[in-house]
Image 1: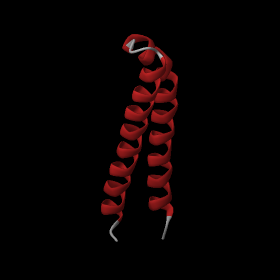
Image 2 (image 1 turned 60 degrees about the horizontal axis):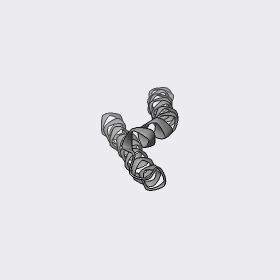
Image 3 (image 1 turned 30 degrees about the vertical axis):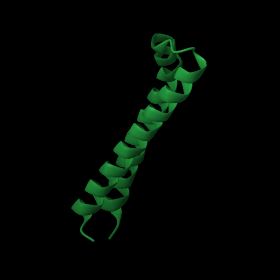
Image 4 (image 1 turned 180 degrees about the horizontal axis):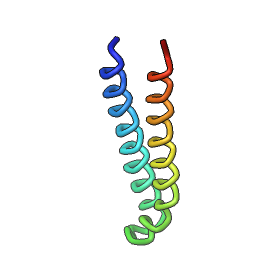
Length: 70
């Protein structure tokens, strides 16, 4: 497969991963904060930040891997 297509596919995968984590943590924490969405967002923020950092890092590591691969 062409490297550009592989990068686009990875971009879709990391975005999808972040969206799934975002939706799941928000819904799950909303259940235990007694429908107080502001409290649920405050609890979920570190998880979202960690996931976003990992997704961006994984994308750029994969991009580096593809550029160094012969």
